[in-house]
Amino acid sequence: MRFHNTFHLPRLPFRERDLTPVQAITIIPGQVNSVALTEVPDPLPAEGSILVRARQLGVCGTDFEIIAGHYGSTPDHSPYLILGHESLGEVEESPAESDFARGDWVIGIVRRPDPEPCIACAVGEWDMCRNGRYTERGIKEKHGFGAERWRIEPEYAIKVEPAFRDVAILVEPASVLAKAWEHIEHIGKRAYWRPQSLLVTGAGPIGLLAALMGRQRGLAVHVLDQVTDGPKPRLVEALGAKYYTGSIQQSRLRPDVVIECTGAASVMRDSLIALANDGICCMVGSSAHLQDTLLNVSQLNRGMVLGNTVAFGVVNANRRHYEQAADALRRADRAWLHELITRREPIANWRAAFQRLPGDVKVIIDLT
Image (cartoon, rainbow, N blue to C red; front, side, top):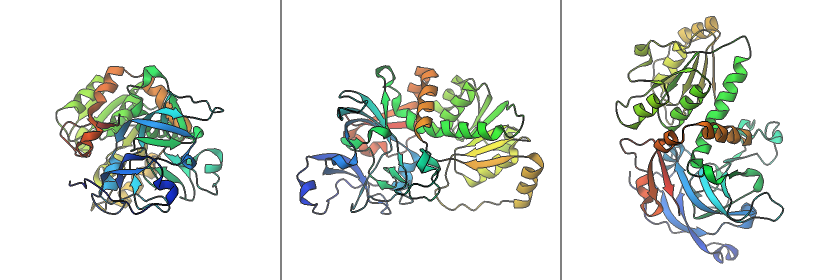
């Protein structure tokens, strides 16, 4: 993958030109591999009353999709999008009436409700937006956290206690899994249901966090991935879970819960077929492109109808899911969480963070 080294911005309005420039990782959505380290204006106060000095930025599969031109959109009147939605930073300025003070460390919530709130956004459930007019930091129509400084509104900032800072960058990806488990458990209440087993497909950071939360719920956890060595099998075994390679059929599992994290069409199909009676499949992985996969819809229909199974998808999270995620991570083994972060790249070596290397699980960029 080839990246641009510099990006020349068009002439900006006078007010923005007067701001101190900061370095940011930018992308031109739809232009493949246009990611660059760019000088951009300091964020305007209108973007949020809290000014944050960035400390860490997590690299996510969604970032790779945006870099590949599959996704992403710029804010109004901007020729570029500042990348990054997994954030951790230190407060430099905040309003006196807020609950934040200089020196506090914070995580930024990614999604914002639509301008004319739908019924979900109106009650703080912006992750379940009904009309699709939401915005997302670093993804959809709103600059992300991949800059030396960023601003945020107090209601979208999560304070991080000092003892938790070393792994707090994992809260955002974990929030999606907290939402997944919340919804799985809500659906399970449709009947008397006592799940015993979980299959997680994919042992990336999302899959491993799903497995962690499954073990915290006392389930027998099975994780399926293609990698045969390196940190992934070790991380799974350290949870007291079982690691598999090959196909779901070869594993002969009949799980009560499946959390599908690969986005691979054939794996999604096999996950639905493998479900035990009354089973629930939550799809977290998103297919980035069209995939040709044979799917016997009649067979799938018959299995779901006769087995009372459910399949659904989740994306993003709201404030309570961030709080649930932080609680799950606090209860996890800290050494295990540290091993989940397999690579830390300084901002000077930012290009390397967007290269997939053998043994990668979670890669973060140190913005200090």
